[in-house]
Length: 213
Image (cartoon, rainbow, N blue to C red; front, side):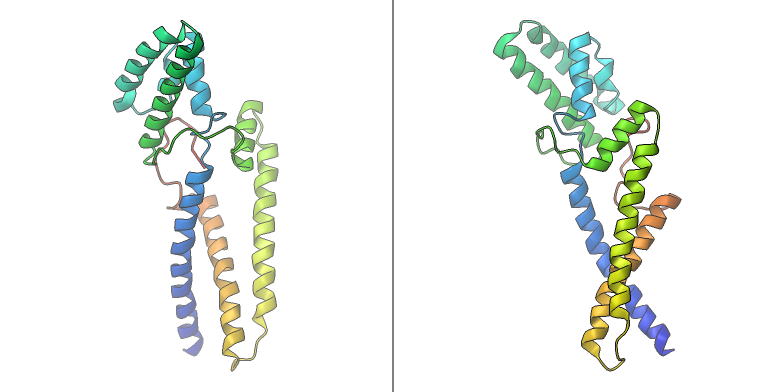
């Protein structure tokens, strides 16, 4: 019963830490999401729509209810865009912002402006390369490497803190502080792999097979 009570306390602590880590992960996902960067897929699609005179490239990235706004912005932008010069750059930027803003809204994420190129998370960039190449081999290596390193770091920290005298409360707390992140990491990875994770990344995708990360 003593161990059960101890285990219950650890589980409650894990829940609290898990909530904090989830909120942190959501914030990190917003910062690292690549669909609002200048070298992201949404901007590329919007530019392709202007260059090829085909708005459907941009429509793929928004919800049906947002389509009219994109079409309206495209109609205005495409006329000015063909004239070139400064007006073209201003019009293009407006259209890119419109498509990206609506895409983010469709995912339930805030739009905070277009981000400079070069801010794409390496794992997400690997996912894009994998889709372009038609092979998940590189992406698999990136993910396995990240999971292996993350697991080793947390496991070794918990194992090193595990051997403590029962009466040494300070050392015991240090063990709990190392144990909780390990358990939470294992639960999160397993839930993601099993398809049962609820957060982060619960917003519906606006483009088949593609999500922000």
